[in-house]
Image (cartoon, rainbow, N blue to C red; front, side, top):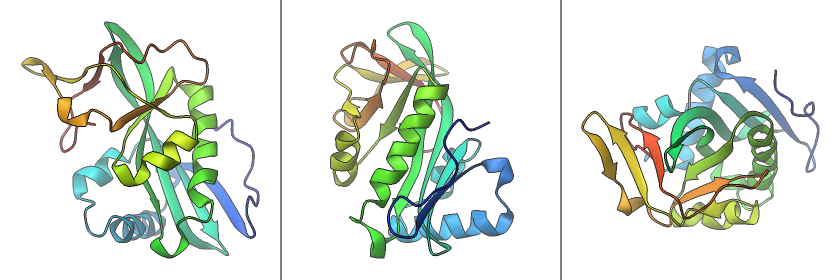
Length: 189
């Protein structure tokens, strides 16, 4: 059960709805994928789509038209050597015609609420283009070493420095510890 409040207008005629992947019809899944392909200018592949499935989808509608999406999926991380249940933000995208109108911020407020209620902390990987939005929504850039757990052991991922952010509303996350994610196809972060 999603602890978020019921859908309600946040901006003139903006409505947010939250649904688990299992509750999304094939038609709405196709519409989400089209939105993400458009938003990421065809730089959104099947692995990226797969990463967004299996969790909660926050959908933003303007007059019944889907204009924004973000997925929060559970991932297993190590914080130092301690296992953590992380809400990982995937497939955050706003229709190009609707960007910079507060839709991303409204989605992130809902995501932050979901993280606070269901996870040890939140994490995401971003490009420079998304950094300002996430930082303005209380997400912090990870300062410690990053790695991925592979079948051959830990592999450092220094190329991800300055692009991995976390949201820890309860505090207690030392941003200078090592942070390790589990391996997956495509981008590991």
